[in-house]
Length: 95
Figure 1 (cartoon, rainbow, N blue to C red):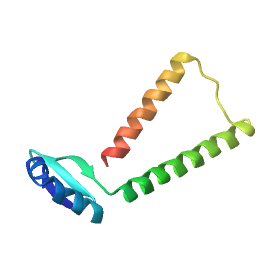
Figure 2 (figure 1 turned 45 degrees about the horizontal axis):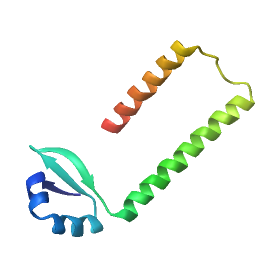
Figure 3 (figure 1 turned 90 degrees about the vertical axis):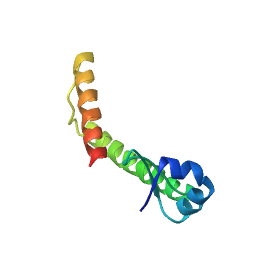
């Protein structure tokens, strides 16, 4: 994957777009990655994969529900679960 500084991306935006059509380009600010520019096709593929994964996870949940495999929680318990899921998502995306 190509890496480019934010200043270079700004100065050579057209070139950045051309590169992004071939492969994802990481934009760095102060030496740290802050964004990735990718082609529309790659973006659509990623979105389709995410949707497919979400549908599979919902299917597993619905199947468990049909089998009576669930736990009832109150609003406080739900907030705890939501916080844990968000935390797990952040850890996963940082890897």
